[in-house]
Image (cartoon, rainbow, N blue to C red; front, top):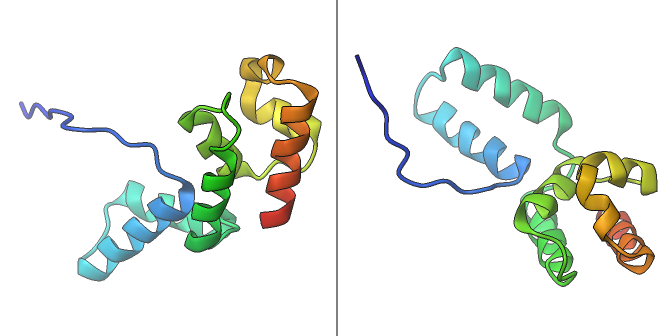
Amino acid sequence: MIILEIISEELIPDIKAKELLESREKEGELKFEQKNSLEILRKFVKLDSNKTDELIAELKKIEKLRDRQIIAIVNFLPGDREDLRAVLHRDYSSLTDEEIDAILKTVKRYS
């Protein structure tokens, strides 16, 4: 029996996962799950790496947002309040109207 130990964990946006899988694909054949993940990421990732980094930096200025929420926003790029509510689930209610507007305005600039 093989036991794997998690050494570290890091939240990354979809574009970073796509880039990681593409670099591994160049090194050799991907496993089935990796191939499927890469195919999905190629279809749905909308921003390039630079824009993603800039958007993350902008969203970090909104103090209530945690890293997990920022990554979800960057991955889904919500266009309105309902989309943002779906992305943030229960955390949405802790945001003020001004914070929600700031998030949506920031996302709109980058998408």
